[in-house]
Image (cartoon, rainbow, N blue to C red; front, side, top):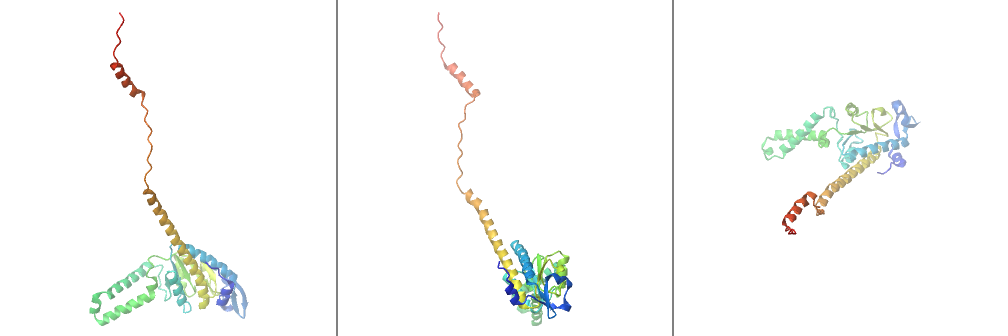
Length: 283
C-alpha cells in the first residue's frame, strides 16, 4: 500500500475548507489556519486519519466483508463509481433510497423484481405482447437499474459505509449509526466529525481531492483482497497435503515372537513322560 504524500494532497486541493462563517466548531482540531476568510485543513492530520481508515478497510477486505460507497453529489459520482468497480465493491451514486439499510429486505425485493424483469425481457414470448406493455417493462427495468443496479450483488447488509459528504448523505449516516455499521467519510470544515467512526479531514467538494483520498482507500482494499486470495491458496494446499501422505504405502509393523507360557509347557512335559519307556527294576 502506497503512502499518502503531502505534496499530492496539496496539489489535489485537499486542504481547502469552507468559509469561516460556515464552519462547524467540532472540526477545530483538524483546521490548520484561516486564510482570506477560508479555513485551511491540516494535511498532516489528514494523512494520519487516512492511514487509520485504510488499515481498517484493508482488514475488512481481507475478511471478505463488503464496503458500500455513497456519493450522490455531481463532483464525485464518476470517481466513486470507477473506484468502487475497480475493487468490486457496491456503490450508490444516484438518489439514496430511504430505508436502504434499515429496511433492507424491501430493497432486496426490488432487486429480485429487476432480475425477474430481465428474465421476462429475454423470454421468447416477450415480443408477442403489445408494444405499450413492452415499453412499460423496459422503462421500469431502466429505473430500477439506475437506482439499484450497483447494489444488485449486495445480498446482505454492508459491513461498512464510505461516505463523501456526510451533510448531503445524512440519511445514509443516520441509518448506519442506527444499525451500528462502521462509517468512513471525508469530513470538510462544515461537518461534524463525531458522527463518523473513521473521519478523514479533507475537501469533499473537489473531484481531485475525492479521487486522491479514494485512490489510497481502494489500494488498501485491493491489498486486503490479494492477501485473502493468498490465504485461500495456502489453505487449499494444506487441505491437499494429507491426501498425498495417505497415498504412501503403510509401514509394516514388526511383530515380536511370542514366548511360551509355563502353563503351555506343562502339557508337553506330561506327554514326553508318558511316551518315555519305563526302566526294568533290579531283582
